[in-house]
Length: 282
Image (tube, one colour):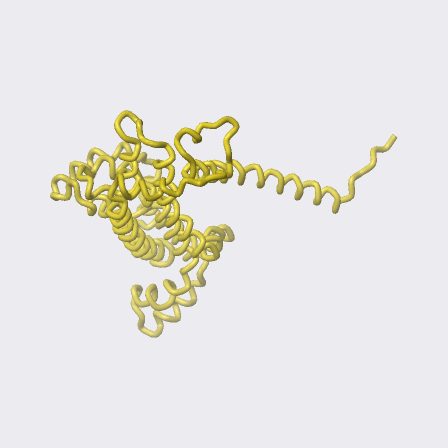
């Protein structure tokens, strides 16, 4: 007896429905912890561990947010994070865009070997280089200084790779025509290629902002003064001695720290998606 075959259009709908359900489950895994964080930040500590949890507080405690500013110098932490993250994002955009252009469109001896060494640095864990970097920071007199977080992060292998993949898609005829007119490599980069590289630059900016805004490891090692703390390190003091602080106030601080990352992503979302897919058609 011959089995009934599902039409091609029907199979496509089944696969699409399965994919949609899978995406909803994955999205829930990422979104539910954030919703729980926001919900708990609006409850009293005694209500934080109710079982089952109350996802929508009936009597939200907004004073948890004001308590964050009262217990720690949050404005100072925020400005420190803005300076460190902003400086790293701007400098990495400059260095990664220029190096990506050079590896993609400039001919020089040993380009492949140099690019391979740059990529190899992505396989080295940050924990293995933290001691040499710390020694160099002390030698330069930058201990307990915000620049100790900025300078080691000026260049990035991932940013170089991302920008190189985008520039490889650009027609080389543009550069050749500009050279005929007497333009130098820097003029070609600055006037022709850089202006059309906004999508991957926005992607790199968003990824770097998210990574360095939430960075905890390096600030914990390099900074000692409270006035120099960034947000992730500074918010730890909300836990109190031996973790006796209010979990609601701690999570209120976490929610405040999340706002800039979410805002940056929403503002650059269109360019972010374009930049992520830019290097996939080579």
